[in-house]
Image 1 (cartoon, chains in turn red, green):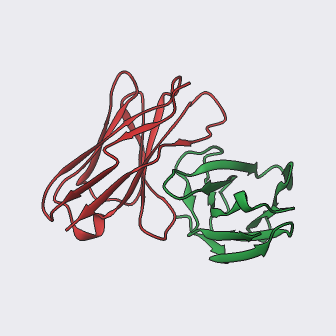
Image 2 (cartoon, chains in turn cyan, blue):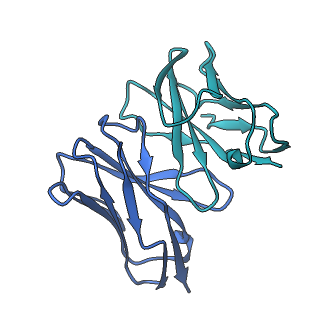
Length: 113
Length: 113
């Protein structure tokens, strides 16, 4: 069984640029959630995707957007990067038909200069 | 929205001793309370969870208790081992599952040999 994989693992951007992060969900999972984890903090919910539609959103501005593809993989896009966007971005997959346990990837570490 | 507070932020125990981490939540509609363990450079991993219709749950050396009236829940680890050293996060959700989790700020547990 393949776990959740994320790419890239690390990246550096400058303020105002755009970034795309990618996530492959665990085999058999149809739901993907994205979380932002600032250094020394707990993860914060960005949004969740189910059947290629956004299915819940946290307190993040519209410049954070996402996609889910027919194979359940997902992308997180962030436009107009700000210094405060520097964080670990975690993708988690789950099955809507099960208990809903989240399986996290190892994250993409974004640094905005 | 939901607010989850977690204490202590750091905890050091001797190997073999017990460790207790406490969380409080604000939303009385919350009904699902998972605990995650995050090791350095990895994503969070679910270690135990509890739903609001249960007051206590145990899995080997790990137990979780829930007091709905007081809106707090606790993680208990007995017979701690060096490999228990990690950051532990509590979380809460009103969806009955791991949808749109609100995380606490984390506890760095160090088990001293």
